[in-house]
Structures are given as C-alpha cells and as structure tokens.
Image 1: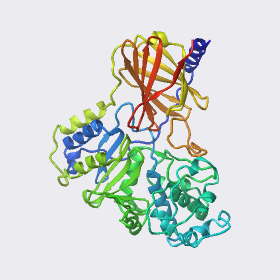
Image 2: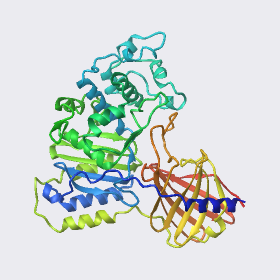
Image 3: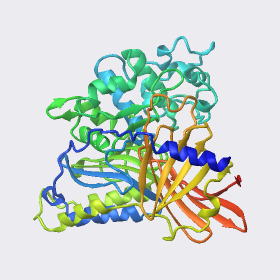
Image 4: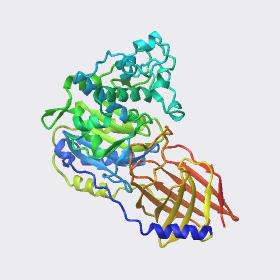
Length: 501
C-alpha cells in the first residue's frame, strides 16, 4: 500500500503546472571591474575564497563600485531572481522606517515607548519602563533582558514584553529582536500603515524593489527584527542608497544627516563592532553593515565607494567571511584600470559557479531496496515527517511529507542540481507563533545526489529561502540509518528512521 501511495503522489506531481516567478533583476548597470578601478582577477579570487571558505556556503553575492555591478556570484542551484530570507538584516530596515517617520514629524527619538501602548501596559509601571525611549530601542539598550522563547509561547508579544522587569534604559547593550518588533509596532501606530507598506511607498517603490515580503506577528504587525525576504540586487540597492547618503537618482529619499547619524558608532556592544540605530559599525575603517543570522550582509564601504551584498548559510560568527570582503576592499586601485581579457574570464567563471554535488557518481544500488517504501523520520531540522524515494534515469524523486502533513516532490539530479517548486513552506529556524504569515509560495527547491553500493548522499536546498540540508542514508544488513547536516549548522546528527514494506 505504501508503494502504491508513493507512486500515486509521484504521478500526480507530474501534472502540477510549474509556477514561475518573474521578479525584476538587472536594474543596476553591469560593467567591467577594471572600468571602476578593480581587477577582475581580484573579484574572481574573492568569489573563489567565499566558495572554499569552510564556515560558509554562499548563495548570492553582488559587488558594487560607484553604483555599478562589477561582480556577482550565484552558484547553481541559486539564481539572482530568487529572494532570500534576510533574518536580522530586517532590523536595519526598521531603523530606516523609524528615521523616515521622525523626518515626517510623526515621532521623536526622545518619545517614551510607553506612550504608544497605553492599552498594553502592565497595571504597575516602573520608573525604568516609563523612561524607556525610541532611541533606547534603536540602540538595543531597552533595559529588558532578551527572551528568545517569548515569541514562541504566546501571541500577545507587546503586552508580555512590556510586563518584563526593566533595568535602567540607555546603558547596557542587549541585542534583542523584540526591540525591533516594538519599533515596527510604533511605526504602524504613528503612520497607520504596516512597516512594509510604509517602506514600499517611500523606499522600495522608488528603488524598483518589487519582490519584497515581511512576516507578520499574531498581532498583525510586521515582525521587525526578522522575517524580511528580498533579492540580493534589492539588498545592494539599499546599500547604495545609504552610500549615496539617502539620494536615489537625484531624489533625496532620506536626509543625509539621518543616514550619517544612524550609521554612526553610537553604542558600545562589548564586541569589536559598535552599533548605531539598528546598524552595525565594522572593524574595517569607516564601513558599516546590516547583519543577519547565517551571514546575510549589506556592507557599505564609503571610503572605497563600494557596496557588497551577501546571502549565505554561515556556520560561524561571520568574521572570516567579512575579512575576505576587507581583503577585496584593500585591493581597490583607483577610478579605472586598463581593460584586459580577465573580465571575459570572470564572466565565464560567474556563469559556471556551482555548489558541489554529493559524493559518488554511480547510481546507488541500495535504491532498488528503498524505492517505493515510506521512510518515517524522527525529529529533524527539515521538519520532514517521512519521505519516499523514486529512482529514474539519473534522477531521484523525493516525495516529502512534512510535520504539517503537506506533501511535495523534490527532484535531485545524479551529480547535478535539479530545481522544482513547492507551495509547502520551507524549513525555518525561527519558531515564532504564526510564522510565515505574510510570506507567500511558491518556493524553489533543488536537489542533487550520488552514492555507492549501500549508501545515498543527498543534498537539498530551498533556493528561494536559504535553508536545506545534506543527508547520508546508509543501508547495512537491511537496516537503514540516516545522518543529517542542516544548512548553516556545524555538525551532522543521526535521525531515527523506520522503513515501511
């Protein structure tokens, strides 16, 4: 019965129409690095270093100088058209929204946070809560100890946050996504618009950023500190807007004074990098960045007139990857260099870049023993409840059932990447109540496989999101074992499996 069910799902999948997204790409001009004072060979070296960096897996990189694209890396199966989840990069966008609202005289840095939520305050208000300001939220000095589990255990986030004990605000840095969430809620209260809609009118539409989504909380507020999704080129545009001191094509979208202030070193963090208004100052001279989990970056280097936008799955604190950017910045030579054939070599390399496929070139013999059987899985970071494997000519079809009982099919090529789509939500490390609200399918997913006589190596990447995993299935004397390494995690772990007849 299990075999019939898997075959039926596989058959149905063949008749599902492929839904294509056609977002804007290619808005920014592409030119040779030499025309902007950078050697093509230095760009290629940087890309190769990122691809070989042991702590990261790049998904998309765009390098700008003087507002022009001089290099872009989208290794297969990733593509420039795919949006990515930016995690805490979203905080910098909230900072921009607050600055815009201040410029429009809708609020002030010195406004008291409690004044925006009179209906959600605790019965007894401490002096510290009463004195907390918008500026304290922007600099991550609210005085409230972070509680990352708060958003996973209830829906009334603002009320619960304001009910927490408050130390003296404005003094101690505590990086907390709930500070950003409250700022998003404040923007919504003073403008009458969700932060995303407010930003669309003032920033995203003028920059022709058309594919952008932002998760919403159970309270109907854009999540602020996370949940923003957009393309790498859109990230680069935001970096260029900041580099231009708020000017875009002759129009001042944000005052230069506010851009200067929000990107300044305003708060010590206890680390090598300092903090502005939801923006990090780098340990490279005069550079600053938006910074998201797993290494999502918008890096702005005013002295070199450069922007580097990066999406990736990073397994460390990102220092190694950022220092590769610093190495590239130090190689800038001037405003122009003689053109050589190195640019043609760079373009050829950019078209050929690919993430490595799994080990093993032969079709795994053990597939015949697993084909059509339902493989039930224990707890795992992909949120897969079970999977069925169906083997074709140089392809492997993985029919997935999620913990939410959604079903979809992933295609994997033997020694190459194949990409399809699904309306099922991808694996997501953030477990907030109501997650995915405001985010819409379809999502692209790619697979590649290899193996030997008794083992299957399988790689899966949700390429329009950023998550994924590497699976190693081993069949020994009729017993199947499974190791899983989630994308962005350092170590693999065993997953309990059982195989149906």
